[in-house]
Image (cartoon, rainbow, N blue to C red; front, side, top):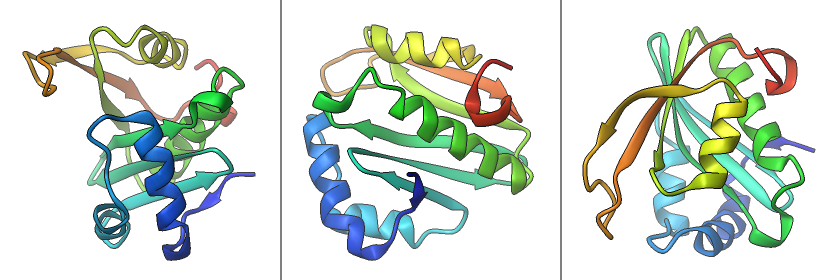
Length: 146
């Protein structure tokens, strides 16, 4: 079940983020994001997504799924729900960044209809390039196809 993230979820969100990223966001940083304007914060057991809507654009800030729970459709469901909520707030386009070497992420985003709109050279601390991906909204129901 996907639901809106709440303040009491912050320790769990931080725990999940730390399992997924070397430079993870702590509960304080995540809490500040939750309080920011335009934020969509969705939580499910084993994962979450944070997105921001500004005018007619949305951006996925992070999506994190515990390693043991991957490849079961949770990230796809979280992204699909975030896209539906962003579209309902007036977003016509969604953007995200993904590491150029992140094959699993790139495959997921490609399956959801995202395509490359640009890149950021040596964007990540370890020198990896980031690919900027873009997708028109809305996605098909529950983020499938489109």
